[in-house]
Length: 152
Image (cartoon, rainbow, N blue to C red; front, side, top):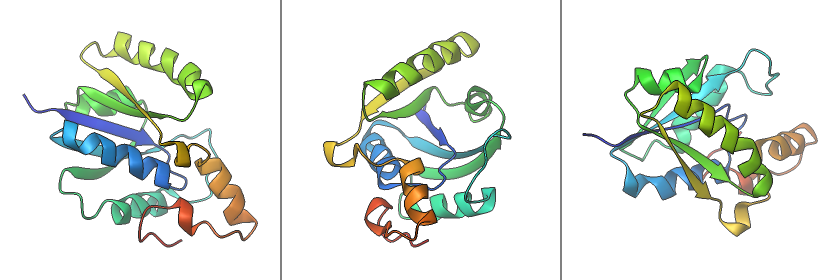
């Protein structure tokens, strides 16, 4: 049985933290889908095509990573691609408190899905898409918070 994982998010924009989680997960899985989601209740800085393109550029050298776009529930996307693992990154206990009930609900909706948490490296714990978006909006330099080679 293949070990297929999904790392889902809005990736608005994708950050070095996201990149690091996928790098950590690569040795554990046969395939990782970086699933760029769209939530109709969110207002994005980058449109769906731009976010998808950023993810593709970020992971273009990783053979086991496939970029996909999806709408709706992450758990339904996991079913569609036969994934049994959902990857999540944790920067702090607030992230854990947010992610834990979601993982529990996903397990109820799809019993074969296991959420795997990765602890963010300390030097990346302050990086979030929302902070990077604020820097972008205020003409700050975000290059060091983005995956290698990604230019906005």
